[in-house]
Length: 198
Image (cartoon, rainbow, N blue to C red):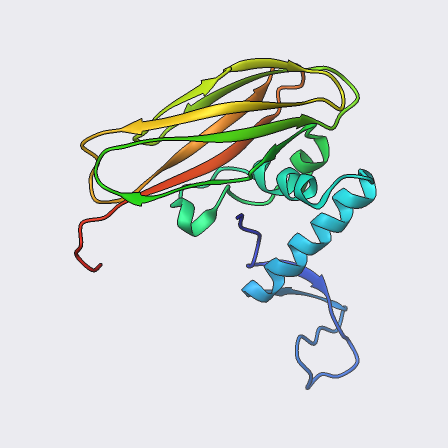
């Protein structure tokens, strides 16, 4: 669903056993590995939950995932992007689902999904919804809406495309807040099969 830092992580470590793992005389060291990215996300989730108590699990997931910073990578590799806890703390709108898997099929597609937006903030939110990048035409109905604090609304998303190349067809749906300037992104993915193994 998202990526987190796994390289050059500056952490506290043990300073009493020079033969032990991650020893540093000053008690701090740089470490690498995906085993560090998972606890960073867990810590970010705890931080967001502590700052914004009372939300549902899905709302916390949306704050972390849909506020991630975009990266230059395939969606299957990076999900919504790189964890950005600052934007997760500031966002006032949550999205459900956090990503859209459109399945696989031929080189033409027309399919619809529903996205639920919820204002978890204390002020009214003016929102616009549009596709960003990707080979599929994305139409959101409605493509603008105003949400009062605590209110939810459903948006119908229609994806269409033709003469698509074999492989992954992917892009993002963006929800932009005119009120705060915050941007929430929902990755989508569709596979065009050609019966040839990769």
